Amino acid sequence: MVTQPRASAMSPEMFMALPNDGHLHELVRGEVRVMPPPKGVHGRIETRLLAAIDRCLDDQAIALGWDASQGLAARDRLVGFAAGGEFGMQFTLPDDPHQIRGADGVYVPAAQYAAVEWDENEYFPAVPHLVIEVISPSERAGDVAEKVQDYLAGGAQRVWCVYPHQRAIHIHAPDAPTSVLRGNATLTEPDLLPSLSLPLNLIFS
Image (cartoon, rainbow, N blue to C red; front, side, top):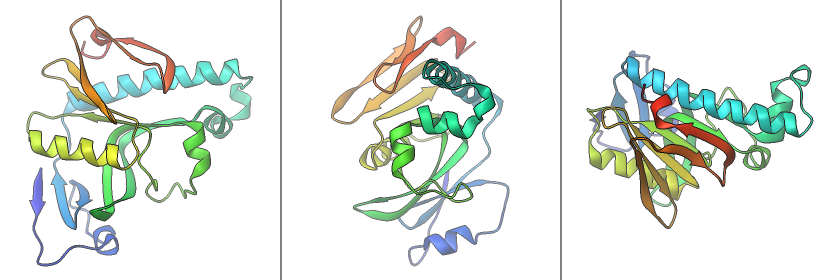
């Protein structure tokens, strides 16, 4: 990741007017963060995690009386939704009122979805309750720690930092120590996704 320094802080309007240079961009404390596109393993792990969450949401919705004929919009209102592919969000922190981030994956529960006004052509106006980041070897530990703290300060209930090369997942929560899953552990999330049970060997195959 590269930070582009500026003589003055960049506004969200200036940020959104930046030309497409083929890279991913974030706006953090008035600075543009530039990130190269991720490599293949990154996308594959992201897809496995989001597919597992989506299966859980289907099961929860079906148990509540939903079926596919009602459409995904009805399912999302009932149980929330998962999204990936650098899911863009814009949120406010005490020291950064216009932060714009792109997460590798998110889960927005139904109650949070119902509480926001959101045009899906725009950034999501809050930090989803679950944020997933697949960490590349080139990412600096300080940048990852800053990102996690910003998500938690913005309202995230869980942040999963997934380390493909270490075959480990670090789970961060507000006011709780970080837990680390590795080896033959199983990823669960009883508070947000009660039916999720995903062995790590199905993530890091």
